[in-house]
Image 1 (tube, helix red, strand yellow):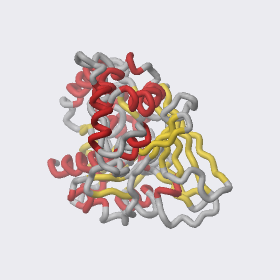
Image 2 (cartoon, one colour):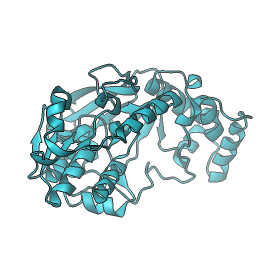
Image 3 (cartoon, one colour):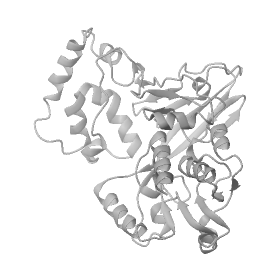
Length: 366
């Protein structure tokens, strides 16, 4: 028998939720993380009195009543509504695509019927089943919206031309025929007051944590330290890449402190043209409403090819990688002691609420 009931590898939202729920059931928990902070990619750091999202913008949104009730046990959420804007060659557009966007693109658009007429006319360009992302996007929203707000942004994001990317990447696009700039349709939305780090700290209160601790430096020792292991790291790394390496996309951040109160007037501004290399600029103080700082903190976000030692942000779920991931998952299903969960361990994209919901379901099943 191990010293702990559960060793949890990774102090992100999946690991923290499991640690919290299992500890409430009387289980003895050790949670480790190779980073020097808890929270995984939702980690926030206070700089100049502003809670800075160190690993990119995170806006919590959910329609799960139980998830919303759960997270509100640990933090009070503000009423932040995600209403990003897009800048394309000095033109400003609202996101998601809605009547404000359409009336700016086409000067004769005033009603939903006007917008629909333009979109339906342009969609007719694609006569057959879309063979790539470009054709898929045009078949959904037409060429004008595609070229201004999708094409160059997507090419920066993925590092490939849109006609070289598979169509399935864009299965659907949010198109709304209302003057509503709220990006999400979920019942609940907001940012934890005080930042996500404060939220995760509350979740892990009283639980033993070891940071700067790499599971793979002493894998055998850690495997014998607990009766069960919940592993949230990369699926292929656990098996030392013996079937091959899964592909990821990464991000690079350039954060600056500016001696001004307000830089861009919005929390998130997407740059959809290729005149700049970054995809968006985040101004962190706009996520919360009570910042009295005379300065502001902004972050330029640059997509990047993944290289060893970089953070894995996006899984590349094409056929090749999905098949490889399935082969690894078959190996993981044979494990008696190790449970795999979360974005990296399952090789899938997860919203924050889905991560927490999956962890809640896992603990219920346990």
